[in-house]
View 1 (spheres, one colour):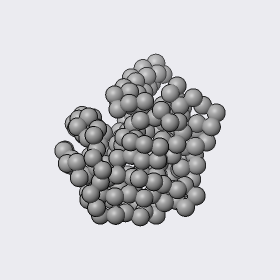
View 2: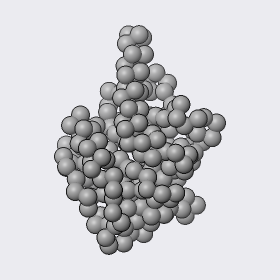
View 3: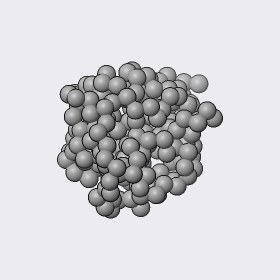
View 4: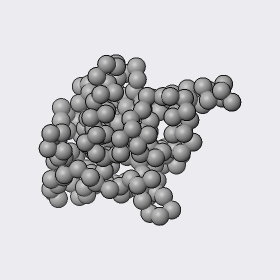
Length: 205
Protein backbone atom coordinates (compact mmCIF):
# COMPACT_ATOMS: atom_id res chain seq x y z
CA UNK A 1 0.00 0.00 0.00
CA UNK A 2 1.38 3.37 -0.95
CA UNK A 3 -1.42 5.64 0.15
CA UNK A 4 -0.84 9.20 1.29
CA UNK A 5 1.20 10.54 -1.65
CA UNK A 6 -0.54 13.47 -3.37
CA UNK A 7 -0.16 13.14 -7.14
CA UNK A 8 -2.50 15.85 -8.41
CA UNK A 9 -1.82 19.58 -8.36
CA UNK A 10 -3.13 21.27 -5.24
CA UNK A 11 -3.67 24.94 -4.52
CA UNK A 12 -4.05 25.02 -0.76
CA UNK A 13 -4.58 28.01 1.51
CA UNK A 14 -3.67 27.70 5.17
CA UNK A 15 -6.63 29.63 6.49
CA UNK A 16 -9.77 28.93 8.49
CA UNK A 17 -12.32 26.74 6.74
CA UNK A 18 -16.06 27.35 6.77
CA UNK A 19 -17.96 25.68 9.60
CA UNK A 20 -18.16 21.91 9.08
CA UNK A 21 -21.65 21.15 10.37
CA UNK A 22 -21.40 17.39 9.69
CA UNK A 23 -18.13 17.00 11.63
CA UNK A 24 -19.59 15.08 14.59
CA UNK A 25 -21.46 12.61 12.36
CA UNK A 26 -18.55 12.04 9.99
CA UNK A 27 -16.04 11.71 12.82
CA UNK A 28 -18.28 9.10 14.50
CA UNK A 29 -18.19 7.10 11.26
CA UNK A 30 -14.44 7.44 11.01
CA UNK A 31 -14.03 6.23 14.60
CA UNK A 32 -15.95 3.05 13.77
CA UNK A 33 -13.89 2.45 10.63
CA UNK A 34 -10.65 3.04 12.54
CA UNK A 35 -11.71 0.56 15.25
CA UNK A 36 -12.31 -2.05 12.53
CA UNK A 37 -8.86 -1.43 11.04
CA UNK A 38 -10.34 -0.12 7.79
CA UNK A 39 -8.59 3.21 8.33
CA UNK A 40 -5.13 3.26 9.85
CA UNK A 41 -1.40 3.22 9.19
CA UNK A 42 0.95 0.58 7.79
CA UNK A 43 3.96 -0.65 9.84
CA UNK A 44 6.22 1.57 7.71
CA UNK A 45 4.24 4.68 8.63
CA UNK A 46 2.01 5.19 5.58
CA UNK A 47 -1.55 6.23 6.34
CA UNK A 48 -4.52 4.66 4.54
CA UNK A 49 -8.24 5.26 4.29
CA UNK A 50 -10.20 8.52 4.01
CA UNK A 51 -13.77 9.78 4.12
CA UNK A 52 -15.58 12.88 2.89
CA UNK A 53 -18.90 14.73 3.04
CA UNK A 54 -20.33 16.92 0.29
CA UNK A 55 -21.34 20.46 1.25
CA UNK A 56 -22.23 21.95 -2.14
CA UNK A 57 -22.05 21.47 -5.90
CA UNK A 58 -18.24 21.47 -6.05
CA UNK A 59 -17.40 21.54 -2.34
CA UNK A 60 -16.76 18.92 0.32
CA UNK A 61 -14.83 18.24 3.50
CA UNK A 62 -12.33 15.36 3.47
CA UNK A 63 -9.91 13.93 5.98
CA UNK A 64 -6.51 15.57 5.70
CA UNK A 65 -3.51 13.79 4.21
CA UNK A 66 -1.65 11.32 6.45
CA UNK A 67 -4.20 11.25 9.26
CA UNK A 68 -4.77 7.49 9.13
CA UNK A 69 -2.73 6.81 12.27
CA UNK A 70 -4.98 8.91 14.50
CA UNK A 71 -7.85 7.24 16.34
CA UNK A 72 -9.60 10.61 16.65
CA UNK A 73 -9.47 13.67 14.41
CA UNK A 74 -10.13 17.26 15.36
CA UNK A 75 -12.26 19.45 13.12
CA UNK A 76 -9.02 21.06 11.86
CA UNK A 77 -7.97 17.66 10.46
CA UNK A 78 -10.83 17.77 7.96
CA UNK A 79 -9.89 19.88 4.94
CA UNK A 80 -12.32 21.97 2.93
CA UNK A 81 -12.21 21.45 -0.87
CA UNK A 82 -13.92 24.46 -2.43
CA UNK A 83 -13.33 23.65 -6.09
CA UNK A 84 -11.67 21.20 -8.47
CA UNK A 85 -10.85 21.04 -12.17
CA UNK A 86 -10.39 17.64 -13.77
CA UNK A 87 -8.94 19.07 -16.99
CA UNK A 88 -6.20 20.77 -14.96
CA UNK A 89 -5.92 17.85 -12.51
CA UNK A 90 -6.19 20.40 -9.71
CA UNK A 91 -7.87 20.61 -6.32
CA UNK A 92 -8.43 23.92 -4.53
CA UNK A 93 -8.59 23.64 -0.75
CA UNK A 94 -8.22 25.47 2.53
CA UNK A 95 -7.66 24.56 6.14
CA UNK A 96 -4.95 23.64 8.61
CA UNK A 97 -3.71 20.71 6.50
CA UNK A 98 -3.75 19.60 2.86
CA UNK A 99 -6.49 17.17 1.76
CA UNK A 100 -6.20 13.42 1.35
CA UNK A 101 -4.30 12.06 -1.64
CA UNK A 102 -7.63 10.64 -2.86
CA UNK A 103 -9.41 14.03 -2.93
CA UNK A 104 -9.71 14.13 -6.72
CA UNK A 105 -11.21 10.62 -6.81
CA UNK A 106 -13.79 11.74 -4.25
CA UNK A 107 -14.49 14.79 -6.42
CA UNK A 108 -15.19 12.60 -9.46
CA UNK A 109 -17.58 10.43 -7.45
CA UNK A 110 -19.49 13.54 -6.36
CA UNK A 111 -19.63 14.59 -10.01
CA UNK A 112 -21.35 11.32 -10.95
CA UNK A 113 -24.63 12.32 -9.31
CA UNK A 114 -25.76 15.38 -7.30
CA UNK A 115 -27.43 13.17 -4.68
CA UNK A 116 -24.16 11.50 -3.62
CA UNK A 117 -23.44 13.03 -0.22
CA UNK A 118 -20.66 10.94 1.32
CA UNK A 119 -17.70 8.85 0.12
CA UNK A 120 -15.77 6.21 2.07
CA UNK A 121 -12.38 4.82 1.04
CA UNK A 122 -11.11 1.97 3.22
CA UNK A 123 -8.45 -0.71 3.09
CA UNK A 124 -9.02 -4.41 3.76
CA UNK A 125 -6.71 -6.99 2.26
CA UNK A 126 -9.17 -9.87 2.74
CA UNK A 127 -12.22 -8.04 1.37
CA UNK A 128 -10.16 -6.56 -1.50
CA UNK A 129 -8.99 -10.00 -2.60
CA UNK A 130 -12.48 -11.52 -2.32
CA UNK A 131 -14.09 -8.68 -4.28
CA UNK A 132 -11.57 -9.20 -7.09
CA UNK A 133 -12.13 -12.97 -7.09
CA UNK A 134 -15.90 -12.44 -7.20
CA UNK A 135 -15.59 -10.00 -10.12
CA UNK A 136 -17.15 -7.09 -8.28
CA UNK A 137 -17.19 -3.69 -9.96
CA UNK A 138 -13.57 -2.49 -10.22
CA UNK A 139 -11.10 0.09 -11.43
CA UNK A 140 -7.60 -0.87 -12.58
CA UNK A 141 -5.66 2.41 -12.62
CA UNK A 142 -3.19 3.54 -9.97
CA UNK A 143 -4.75 5.72 -7.28
CA UNK A 144 -4.58 9.50 -7.51
CA UNK A 145 -3.92 9.54 -11.27
CA UNK A 146 -5.86 11.04 -14.18
CA UNK A 147 -6.48 7.49 -15.39
CA UNK A 148 -8.14 6.66 -12.08
CA UNK A 149 -10.44 9.69 -12.31
CA UNK A 150 -11.44 8.79 -15.88
CA UNK A 151 -12.04 5.16 -14.93
CA UNK A 152 -14.46 6.18 -12.18
CA UNK A 153 -16.37 8.32 -14.68
CA UNK A 154 -16.43 5.42 -17.17
CA UNK A 155 -17.68 2.96 -14.53
CA UNK A 156 -20.83 5.00 -14.07
CA UNK A 157 -21.41 6.24 -17.60
CA UNK A 158 -23.79 3.30 -18.14
CA UNK A 159 -24.64 2.37 -14.54
CA UNK A 160 -27.05 3.73 -11.95
CA UNK A 161 -24.75 4.77 -9.08
CA UNK A 162 -27.11 3.87 -6.24
CA UNK A 163 -27.51 0.34 -7.57
CA UNK A 164 -23.71 -0.05 -7.87
CA UNK A 165 -22.42 2.13 -5.05
CA UNK A 166 -19.20 0.28 -4.28
CA UNK A 167 -16.12 -0.78 -6.22
CA UNK A 168 -12.75 -2.37 -5.64
CA UNK A 169 -9.55 -0.62 -6.76
CA UNK A 170 -7.38 -3.21 -8.48
CA UNK A 171 -4.65 -0.64 -9.07
CA UNK A 172 -4.55 0.37 -5.42
CA UNK A 173 -3.73 -2.58 -3.19
CA UNK A 174 -6.42 -3.24 -0.55
CA UNK A 175 -8.43 -0.13 -1.60
CA UNK A 176 -12.25 -0.18 -1.65
CA UNK A 177 -14.64 2.73 -2.20
CA UNK A 178 -18.31 3.07 -1.25
CA UNK A 179 -20.65 6.05 -1.31
CA UNK A 180 -24.22 7.01 -0.59
CA UNK A 181 -26.96 9.62 -0.38
CA UNK A 182 -26.01 10.27 3.24
CA UNK A 183 -23.23 9.36 5.65
CA UNK A 184 -25.43 6.61 7.07
CA UNK A 185 -26.23 5.16 3.63
CA UNK A 186 -22.56 5.22 2.60
CA UNK A 187 -21.66 3.24 5.71
CA UNK A 188 -24.49 0.78 5.09
CA UNK A 189 -23.20 0.35 1.53
CA UNK A 190 -19.82 -0.70 2.90
CA UNK A 191 -21.36 -3.28 5.21
CA UNK A 192 -23.66 -4.51 2.44
CA UNK A 193 -20.83 -5.11 -0.02
CA UNK A 194 -18.87 -6.86 2.76
CA UNK A 195 -21.79 -9.17 3.58
CA UNK A 196 -22.60 -9.85 -0.08
CA UNK A 197 -19.00 -10.62 -1.02
CA UNK A 198 -18.48 -12.92 1.97
CA UNK A 199 -21.67 -14.79 1.11
CA UNK A 200 -20.70 -15.22 -2.56
CA UNK A 201 -17.13 -16.19 -1.64
CA UNK A 202 -18.32 -18.82 0.84
CA UNK A 203 -20.49 -20.46 -1.83
CA UNK A 204 -17.47 -20.93 -4.07
CA UNK A 205 -15.25 -22.45 -1.40
